[in-house]
Length: 204
Ligand code: SAH
Image (cartoon, rainbow, N blue to C red):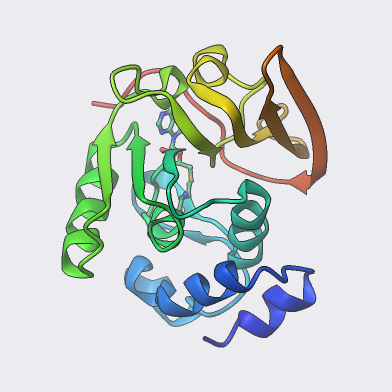
């Protein structure tokens, strides 16, 4: 894939992450007039006024999540399904939740077409996580919250890792990595990012 060089130059070295990014064709997740820009390292508009993230940011977040082959992963903010598809290459099981039904539906269709059988897209307000399926080994949030949502912290397994952009919606946000220990949580600031906001409730 053409942007692998860019991703490497941004400091992503994890061979499993790079190989997952090579296997999943971003062009499958970008439709309409922006399709011919799928291999550029930039976010692009998708349906419902949302965006597919920049490939180098997807790579950095995936690397920061340190996903193992036995992990059960929750993604909040399915969008195009691209990030979830990358995670499906690295994890045992991926659940991705989206507040816009058409996005969740189209992403699930794409997972089925691509034969990605270990990833499921669901319609829900992801700030509450998925209590029936918790706990998760890894949680990735691809929309910006003011703080890491409490229910997601609670649904992280001990020893688990969560990556979440934190900050006010229209200013620069900070990507945070949270590690859950036996007695609490450790927080580490990774870098500045910019995501669409995490919004409460599902859309109609
Ligand atoms: N990960 C996506 C990009 C995410 S854009 C990709 O790979 O393409 C952020 C997404 O989060 C948007 O689709 C938005 O609708 C969704 N979102 C925002 N708030 C949400 C919430 N509370 N629950 C679930 N999804 C939410």
